[in-house]
Amino acid sequence: MAANGSNAGREETSEDLDEQLDDGKQLGFSPEEEASMVAESNTHKAEANTLFSSGKYDAAISKYDEALAVCPTYLDYELAVLRSNIAACHLKLEEWKEAINNATTALDGLDRLEREVATAEKGKTLSTDTDKGNDTKTKEAEDDADEAEEEIVSAGAARAGPAITKPPPKESEAEIARKKRREDIARIRAKALMRRARARSEMGGWSNLEGALEDYKKLAAMNNLALADKNIVKKQLKALPPRVETARATETAEMWNKLKELGNGILKPFGLSTEHFKMAKDEKTGGYSMNFQGGGPGGSQT
Image (cartoon, rainbow, N blue to C red; front, top):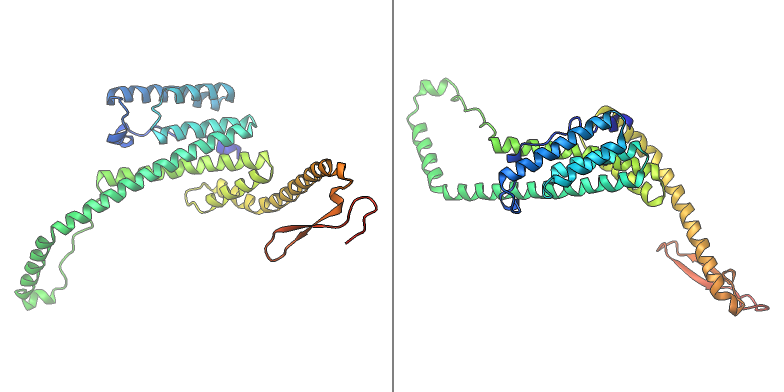
């Protein structure tokens, strides 16, 4: 996992501003103001990347924080990159909770961005379908023309074989930009998931270990992982389930012991204890019921 962290920020460069912005999200910033803010943020990020590469992780976090402070708050992709890099710093410092929090914030931002991209693509598809509906008569006329042309094709031409078909249309610049955006989102998502999964696994505990297992399952379904990361995911998917089960059993036992202590404190004035009650599990439902086993001192068993 160290190899994953050591590359933080080296490949994560800012996208062209024109590909980032949605006309309805400018929040009062002019394009010039926003470009200046992004440029300043990227300067801080570059300095932070250098500090990270030098092993100065605390200083790198401070610089990443400066980059966050000047980055427009609606640029989810760029903010996710910064948060993911901060998570990598905390991993190096073995500050697991902070790594989890920053990686989660990065993933939340990417989720928002993916929804926006999907909405934009859906809107484009609906617009295209509407245009096709408006061109029905034109299409019918073209079909009629094609049929008329077929009627006058000579026998020799027919024997010559089918006409040469046109190559498929090239992708538009907007389509290429959207494709690249999806790839960038997937790349940063993989980094953030790897970092959060590692931190959750290291921090331990039933909840964190279950969370790590879920993260690794998501990573296993992704097709953009490096070979080293694939190997880590495969290994963790085997190692985590027994750790989850052990943590579950341990924490459940601890919880019951605490409940028994609390119950004994409440029951003591009545000459009772939790030993007078038995928990019985219903194998069909998985739930528990409590049965009273005896009275107070000198009481008979029932």
